[in-house]
Image 1 (cartoon, rainbow, N blue to C red):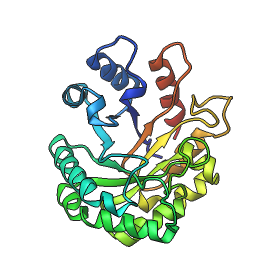
Image 2 (image 1 turned 90 degrees about the horizontal axis):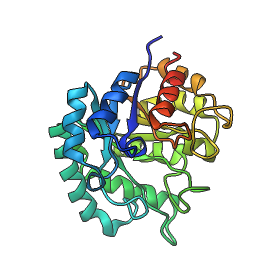
Image 3 (image 1 turned 90 degrees about the vertical axis):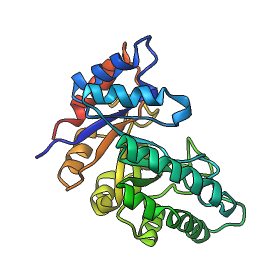
Length: 262
């Protein structure tokens, strides 16, 4: 069985007094294949992209627009988000970044789930052709509304899948965050297998606590990653957890080894 391709979120593993180059080379030495960036304005974006290439890492993902709470499900955001996504698509094309994170936003008063889906579909339809031409995926993120993001609308796989189906583009998919969907739904492996064609990226973390993948949490990441590896999923599984190990690279190394047991 082939191993999954693992990446990591730069912002969670980069504040130990090490240079960008050191962080990326350490990650590559562990066996990771890519690095992820959240907002470009909060990271040394150009330096990460350049040093990643030197270290043999891809840049797998970054945020495509603002903001998590104020997103695609508000029609008054449509022009702003279209402009932001078109700019991000061009940057992703130039930098060879495979995916952009998109957000539904929090629920609007009086708006049904169906109306929220319709608004997100309309917004993504505006930019899907640009994403297709650039070879960039727009990954609508699934987040929990129970613990971390109260009010977030794209909080169940079925809701996100319905958006993706209605947009009907090979470059509009879901960011399936395993931690968040464990909180909202459970039944992670079955859900992944049944919806893998709609998934363009994964995030990991232990639950509860969004911490290391050890005996303190309730998910078996060996089994989850074996399930992903058994599909034809070709993209990345990105680590987005908060480690409590003595060094952040030690926590990342442990996660890599767990998820590499294909």
